[in-house]
Image (cartoon, rainbow, N blue to C red; front, side, top):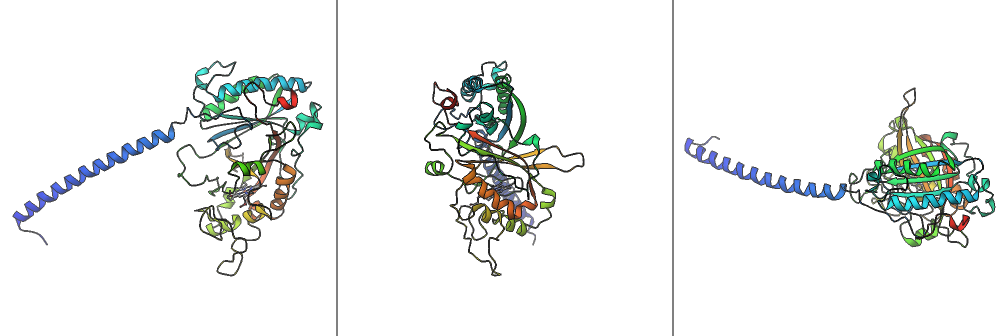
Length: 403
Ligand code: HEM
């Protein structure tokens, strides 16, 4: 239906005017959207000045909301390094950790500018069982720190990712900060210890995850839903509550777990969800619809089978105990493929618990026995550490043991 010329012109002019108005409104809207977006970006991406206090009852880097970048650096003590020498190393480290986490240069820093923006830097220090043995302190080794038993059904452990006398776990929201801090702290350790392995990990960059939704791992699953969250839960699950020098400390289990993502990709989404017992999109248990909903382990699906399968990761990890039994604070890794092109991708599974033997081992035994996820994951590294209690201003890390 075409109009008479006149009305068409008028109509055309009106349409042009309307279009111009709409365009202007669009421009305005898009300008507003851009301004809002830029403001959001400015807020969410400027993370350089963020600081996490180093001093306190507990070391930082455990409760701390996980930063985007991390290195787990393990060392072995040099021959002849005794308890007094470890004490000297701890004084040096405490001083430098206090400096670098507050935006000040380490003592021997030749590039002090790099220290000015700590980006929520934390450095968490741990002692492996070997340190207690080599310094004659076996009697003082915390009861919660035990070597893991072998898990022959799943383990393919390599020495180059396992063990270690001393751990420095460095985390920040900026990879430059992690690298620079590592360089500075290596200077402190050089006379006392030799590097054993370094494992680098990452999580979502700041501002890139969807607000309010949990962090995802490289399999795409929301990972970290069931974790202690309140002080009461941390006291019950994570911290050694004393008495003794270790009060306020905890233990770390670090497992380097390779993921076979090529074979995982052969599953359809429903099979992936059955393996975990949770929905991929929302992270909700298969018995429900919201991430933080309590799983109903008895619920049946429409076919009359258990909604959360018997060998699902969720069911076996939980066992019969309370929901929150360890704190999981994992990082992803993605290293160079091997000579045959097989990818080297996975999770630096890192858990904190007051007592490895009581909390971690039974859980890992259940999972090692029959977790469906084992078909696509292989532990290739393993280490345990006593994470020292925190220190107050004027004190140093490990003073209660070595002072
Ligand atoms: C690459 C290896 C692993 C992956 C990809 C993985 C992934 C997941 C995911 C996606 C969840 C569900 C969401 C959540 O609660 O965070 C979960 C839960 C859990 N995982 Fe793992 N996990 C791995 C290894 C382990 C290991 C080695 C352990 C301990 C020995 C473990 C212990 C747990 C626990 C305790 C839960 C919470 C279960 C509950 O009470 O609901 N996971 N894991």
